[in-house]
Length: 348
Image (cartoon, rainbow, N blue to C red; front, side):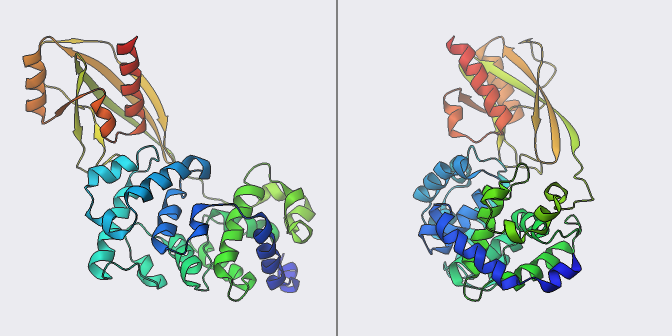
């Protein structure tokens, strides 16, 4: 691997990627604008969301919040509502927090320097590099999982990507490949190659512009790269909710304390014991997050009368909303699904 890297024409590889991208690059909305706000929104949305799944959300979000000011001045509930369906809601909270930073610290103008972009809430090295290179031409590689996978395969490089030093290592490697004046295009080329061709599983090597130069392909070891020695620890988490319903109305609240679903709406997670209710048996739902496996017990609770229902609401500090009205609130996906299930039953 060392000898190969010493002899490789790094710049040639970068130019080959850029040439491929000009012909085969994906038609994405942020590639039709130089507005750093729009590019930033795109990058945040597509970090955890597939392109086709996220496009409609991007259009709706930027139509309602077309610039930094409208996002900064919006109600948090509305921002969360327009993020509905994308998951990882902390991204929406950080977007608004960052928009307010831009208003306060940069006079409402999106910053153009890498370090200033990096200072924004929820923005990491990858996003800062992507925006600064694409919008402002800064010569910085936007290293993410696609970079690790493409570069480690091209050079059959066994560097452990779970180690903190791998980011700097692959950034320096990418810089040697990056054609002068084409940082943004180069970054987008690696993104597309990693997403569409050099995929984690079943890569389309016969369509890759770097196949001839790919060391892992030559060795027949594509599946061995990238190397990740430290495995992600997935924790088990058990939750319980009471689905309190009277007629077509339910009880909800917005979670304010630190939790995986902070700022989202949820059902009561506890009930007073001195109320007479009709309680159905619990339904258990399983849901997977990136680092957690959730087991959620939903207990259907039917108060005997309207007075008891309203007392439960006031005692616990819950809102009363209709099943239809719940659509105007942002819930975690498994809770949203449970509402839909119960609403369907009500209509049947």
